[in-house]
Image 1 (tube, rainbow, N blue to C red):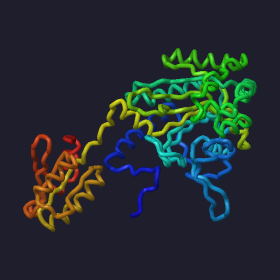
Image 2 (cartoon, rainbow, N blue to C red):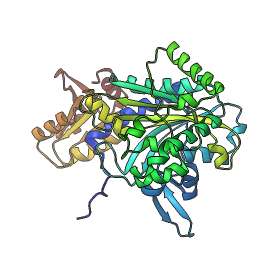
Image 3 (tube, rainbow, N blue to C red):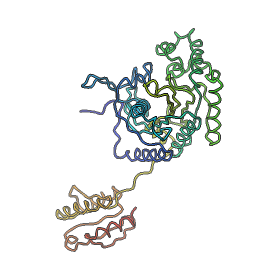
Image 4 (tube, helix red, strand yellow):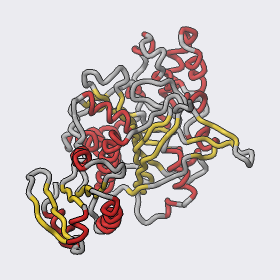
Length: 425
């Protein structure tokens, strides 16, 4: 039997309403912050991610789904959303857009070949935003504010926001050297990845999942001590404006973004809800200066974040927050014979064109079984069609909750639609 690929999931009709509810909310909040949707291809040139994410990262080295197309070109199913957005920004010359910064969001499937864990899949849905074209603490705060708004809008309370500053390129270079001096004498105690990272990107040692509890990681130099005055002032403005908005946060001096182009503000949102799981990160983001140039673009800067819908659903479950189930259909048509079934099909066609959600029985069941089916579909109204109704052209419209009935003409489609709308569930 052919089965679903390992590390993926079927989202069945009994659960899709949860996804639709979340997606609708995300679209709404993004629009409120004046972020416009961007849609990039599911696959891109492999080089985009090698350059844009980093050849030394686990994503590029271990997790990408890469294939050769018929033109013998290396393509990759996108593992993250920022690099494709930046590629589109450059290719479509968005730096010339009169509206600056360019503020976009995306909601799309991503693909990473990683070990299956609770809430982590090899195909997952990611929502993210990017604000490109302005370097200002207020934009950083807007992005963080939007992030908090999203999670709090679902009623989540067990949230912890951690922020830090990576500083500008000069501060980062000084800090990298301090990390090399700190880790080099004992680097053979670390995993093979970290032994490579010390020469390619020492900040990523702080991100290592295997060595996170090593004493040298716990006692590593703090990046804040290596920030120059300009970087400190930038970070202070970010924290001051977060304070002004009443957004609670904690400064985590070990919070870094390991990719070379990240600068200044970095942040992560965690859940400390009981039962959420060992991996508590809900969302991460930060400011990137240099990514556009790395991809042969203009000297522009950006900031953004990305979140997983699957992780959001887990957080809601951990806090016992239920997404409201959708309402049932407006009308269910019960039929008593073949002639009635044919007429019901025609009536459904007309009603649906009027915006009425309706259904009928297709299994030729008895009336009692059809009424049970109407209950299962949570129909607000039912009508019964039989020989008598076809002769008179009139039906009894029954309101299922109250039991009240009213005779209406089948030909008077407008009246039937109005009654359903006025007395709907």
